[in-house]
Every structure is written in structure tokens, then in C-alpha cells.
Image (cartoon, rainbow, N blue to C red):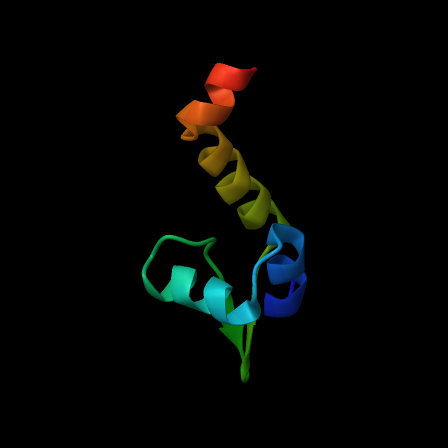
Amino acid sequence: MTTAEVAGLLSITPKALRDLRYRGRGPKGFRRGRNTLYPTAEVERWLAAQMAGDRLAQRAA
């Protein structure tokens, strides 16, 4: 997935996604030429980890 696709999925800007990745808090990606690509499985794993760590969402369930 491209940076724009992942950012759209997360409802954040591409810059916010780049900042998360730079700080080591976002999904892992890899460089392909000038683009950063994110494997779909990695994005799904990262989302699952974020949901597992969200105590407020767990309380609402």
C-alpha cells in the first residue's frame, strides 16, 4: 500500500503517517525508489496492536 492509501485508511494526512513512521510509532514500511510502501499484512498487524492497546475501546466493548 502507498503512503496515501494507508493515510486514507487511517483518516490521517500522509504527513502525519510519515511522522508516525519516523518516530517508530507507525506501521513498518520499506522504500521502493522514492516511495514508501507498506505491506497490507503489516498495516493490519499494526492496526490490531493499536486496538489491543486502546483501553478506552476495550471498556466500551
